[in-house]
Length: 283
Image 1: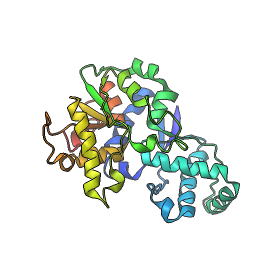
Image 2: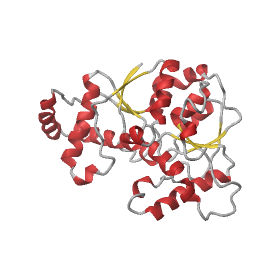
Image 3: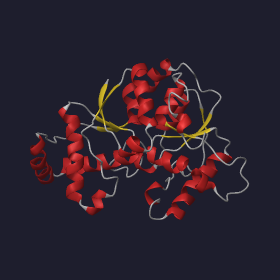
């Protein structure tokens, strides 16, 4: 199996352990993720509101780089997923816009055709690779762990552009957690927002949102929170101390947060150090 892998800004800067873990999985799972080193920032759900033409051109180019390789495009960031798929929807449904963008792409000898699908790493593991096949690769079943899944907004909503599963009752992350042997802990905030996208402009409100989710997970006595999104991880891990400050009547004052690729890596037998888990703010 082979995919074009979209290098998101957050993974290249703050959450390098996501791609570090993914590189480990390549050998075990036999999935070749070819990194698009010529790709550029997707605009992070902001560029669209500043300049829609630039937003469409940038993301048409990112997808066209995958099409040049004849591969589908995969990302491990929820927001990149939403932005890329939303742009793809507009480009595929508007020939005039598509032609205008392709005139720009001619300068780099690229063309957006719409043939490449845009997928999340979670979807690739669940649907393309298959959970039955993953179960056969598990060397270290995580039977002693209780895990609170945190999906994040942009892998579920807006469902018009994402559409992989019911945004109100998703199961992909739960199923993957169970496949590696761990116990899924249900809790109220599994489908809530992490607050990341308001962090720089409304920190107090953002931290309250993250704190509510962290508190919910702690009250279930979960060992870990697992998320498929590095932006959610940043809110829930990097800002956890601030987010939980002043919260009372908790059985403990922190909960570790790990990435999707790290969860799989643990089940395949890699150490926390090999997967970069020891680099997280919450140990």
